[in-house]
Image (cartoon, rainbow, N blue to C red; front, side):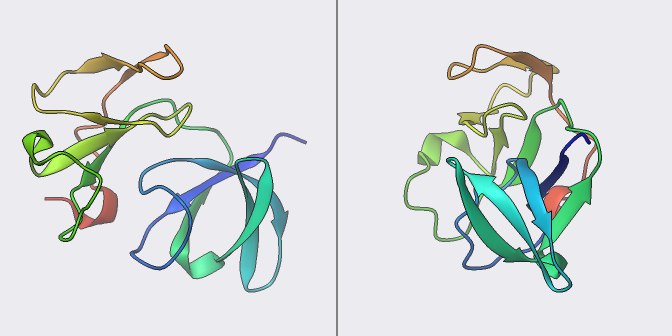
Amino acid sequence: MEPYWARLKTEGPYPLRRGAWYPVSEFHADKVLVEVLWSPVGVPRSAVEITEERPLQWTVVPRPRHAVRLPESWGPVYGACPNCGHRASLRSAPPMMGCHQCEGLFPVAWDEKYLGRK
């Protein structure tokens, strides 16, 4: 069986990167276990979006209000790589972008409304 994939769809105290996709290892009635750095992490089912196929486009993520580790120069949004979850600047609004971490090349999901992005 192919793995399912999950990403956060709401803000919360979860150890997942916003916009990044994680493989689902187990389903339970009220939570799912996702693999984060090869360790299972329980997340409420209501807090994640789940899909059967791994999306292969950058997620455009709205900058958190109190972002600490994101450069101000990145502006109001940043990208999350669909392959490895690495974050990157989207200041130049590219239609496609390469990831410096995993070296993958993917389209940017500008038309997607992740976390209510306008």
